[in-house]
Image (cartoon, rainbow, N blue to C red; front, side, top):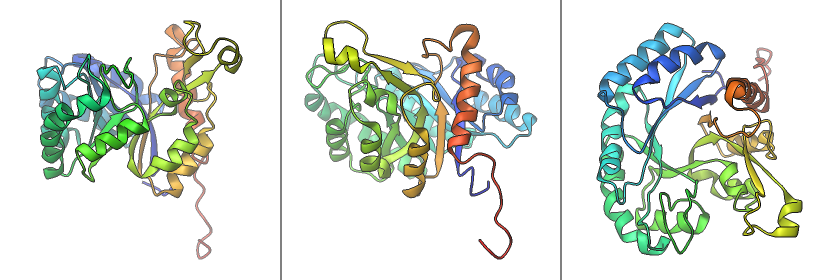
Length: 299
């Protein structure tokens, strides 16, 4: 790894039992890493078998690609299968050659964010400790998944006030955030100001952006049912990712930005990979473009 790609640019590759086949198709496109993510439950094949299949695909590609992280995106506060999934991902992480597990913090549906905290601590206290014992970090995505402060749903780790409660409930150095500007912008939060404040707790990023229709907000607000924000693939949204990567680098961040596709209203369907590869090259450019070594003796 050069000093240039200390921040790797990859994509999410969660296709259940078909993950290895999917990776085999997209590995030649230039992605530098992959988040292997699971939706609500784990695949039917054993994680150890999936890990072996994934490693063989990446080794065969010979491009130095890595698994940046595993993703467990369910509601572990009410779903025992999702809770157990976190434990199983921690135990299987070494097989994938990763030290990071990301996902949703969950929520006690029908209760507020503060009232979900006792259950959160009960579930994630042991998970975070288990991860720490294995040298693994845990990071929560900042997607609300329909949660509000007074009515939690799948993920309470969606805003700074909730993060403060979470990190107080389970204080641990290996517990942090999987951050992306999209979900903050859709709450009308200025993402760069937030990133500067919370960057030390950011362990991983999803490459997803948004476009805000400020005229719609000004004339109709955000509760009229009229769309005021659209999720976008990086390079097509409002965020300056040059600034994002500069903030990360100035804070000493070393990790990955994995593109979260399948949301863009334009670059979707037959244009999905066109949009994702554009995002890859855009984020690589935001990282500084092609690495150029300094003259010897002058660096």
